[in-house]
Image (cartoon, rainbow, N blue to C red; front, side):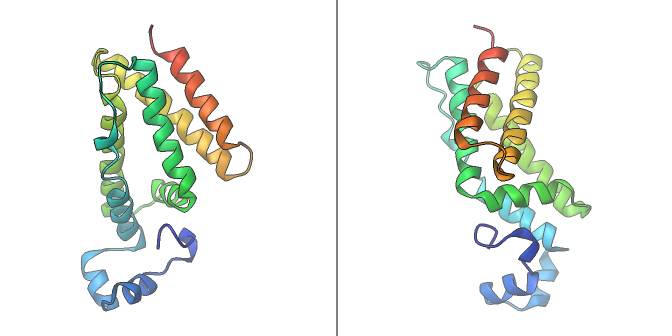
Length: 165
């Protein structure tokens, strides 16, 4: 449902109905809609790290462009998932917050894997900045202020500026 329905219109009772379980069963395992959706986000993103190309033939800049480009495409292809991510960033549900933090840690590790030859502090700084560029660019795309081409261009340019040759 996270892919098919706007976050604001998803109701836990509809999720229970679609899953063929009682509403009480869902609430036994999930404290809130945010908790449930954070689990869905984590599952949706679970295979992302497996697809990071760490071959020795690509430069660090090429690997970073590729991994952030892949992330951009994933959210562009499923804009409602990006909307859910934005909603979950503001969640006050402690269980949702913990899962969202796990999502962030997984993504950071996947992005950092593209820079494994750099010192840890440099890698962390580049991932933080590139992730901010990705997030801001996708937000602009979602709001209609940027195109997909703009998102790619911003990702590519940021990588070129940040990563030592």
